[in-house]
Structure formats: C-alpha cells, structure tokens
Amino acid sequence: MPRRKDIWRCGIIDAPVDRVLSSGLSTAHVHWLPEEPRFHFLADPFPWRHAGQLHLFAEAYDYRRRHGTIDLLTLDAAFQVVERRPCLAEPWHLSYPTVFEAEGAVWMLPEAHRSGGLHLYRLRSGPQDWVREVDIRLDAVPVDATPLYYEGRWWLFYSPADRRETRMGHLHVAWADRITGPWLPHPGNPVRIDRASSRPGGTAVLIGGRIMLPTQDCTATYGGALRPLWIDRLDEAGFAATAGEALDPPASAGRYRDGFHTLSSGGGVTLIDVKHIDRSLAGLWLEVTRRFR
Image 1: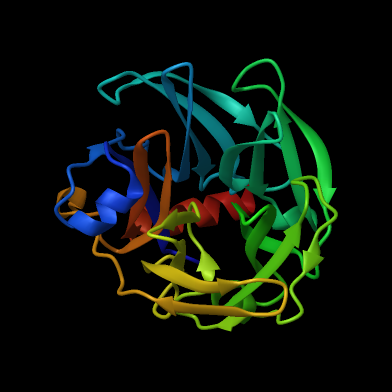
Image 2: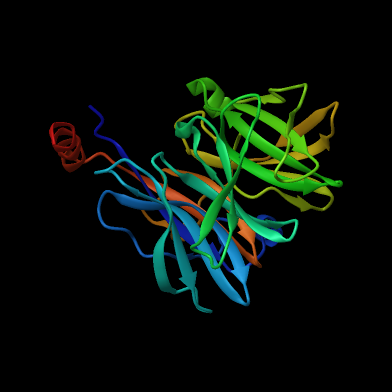
C-alpha cells in the first residue's frame, strides 16, 4: 500500500522561457502560488493571456479522490490569484492542460490517457467554458501530448501510455495540416528512446532557430528532473535531437526540491512546477481509509 505522496507546487517567472534558460533557472525570481491543503496539489501549469489578463490552467489533484481535474486561476499584475474556479472535469483523470491559439480559435489538449484516447477541446464563451471538439487518433494512446506549429504544419510530441517503460522513456511524433487532424504518425516512431529525455514536460518553442522541447528526466523517479531537448531535424523522414543538462530547481523552491517536471511558456511568462515527497504515516493512513471507505 503506497505511503509516498508526490506533492507539487507551481511558480511563475516574469520572463519568456528563452531568457530564463539563458540566465539560469536556479537564480530566477519565482512568484510561488500558495501551498495547497495537505494531500492536495496543483501541477502541470500552462499560461494563456487574453485581453491583458494572465490565466493559468493546471491539474488539481486530491489524494483522497485520486482523480485529476483542470482548474483555472486568474492572476493580477503582481501574479496574485484573484479568482480560481473548476474549468474542466471528465469521468477520467485529466492533467497537462496545454492551451494555445490556432486557426482562429483557442484550444486545450489535456492529458487523458485513462480515457483510452486524446481529446481536443475548443474554447466557447469564456476561459472556463470548453467543448470537446475532436478525438485525435494516433499510433498509440499518448501521454503529455505537446503541439507545435513548425514550417507550415502541426507537430505533436508524445509518449505512448501502454507500458511504464514507454511512458517514461519513449518519444513519438505525428504531424497534421490542421490542428483537428487527421494526424500521421512519424515512420521512425519511437524517434527517441531515453528515460532521461523523452517524455514531454511543457511548451515546445523555437529558440535561436532550434526547437526546444522540455522533457522529463525519469531515470530516478517520475518527474525527477527536467531537461531541454534541442531538436535539430524534424521532418517526415527524420528526427535528430540532443538533450541538454538537467535544470536545477530555483533556489527559492525550499522543500520542493525532489522533482521538477513542467516548463511551460506563453504571454511573456514562464511557468514551472516542483515537488516534495511526503512519506508521512498520515499518507499511509489516508490510503488505508480510502481503500476501506
């Protein structure tokens, strides 16, 4: 019966990701979101700025329920939370709510592998109002699917959900002419096998003419660290990439230094999450009461 609990905390850096990487993450000034109640966490933060207002979408998780949903947090100019509300919930676990604009609409592509697929949502009337638009078909049920528009088409980076080793250490790629598909898997899949730098972990961006895909280093533990994967070739016939050094958590992370697994960006800011591992007897008792409830 598991006693260990990964507890994540989100932070905001008032700078674009290229500047954060060049100046160094360990010394960055981070605006930390308040800690959640015990055995709750917010993780996988993604930004979206609309009409000058910064919104943050994140996985909200309660170990008593073990079912992730997506929360929307609206922030003021000082990065203080002025409003928080539930944003998206499904019968299956949701996380990793990447939000982006494409083809005249705003989209969310949350991680949903326990549903047996991947579902693309479109924004309707406001940032908490989403409709499921299309189911994306790939060569495997994906985890942490990450989109990028590059050289006139959409690309999707993801890890297959079928086995632990593929979830932690395989990278697949697909492409499409439109964000709604149809999607074509890369003939070289898996294009990368490396537990230290394959599973996506944030926003893919162009920096200095190269694609930077944040990836999770899962060699020691899930979400143990984060590395930039620098992609030098991405086309229908080939893929080539080099992993950078693992990024150190910011010095202000305090006890949250046991892991780091999201580096997302947009709207002039960079978002991160870091974790500490709770091994208390209270966590074990929570599991006992949950199983017999």
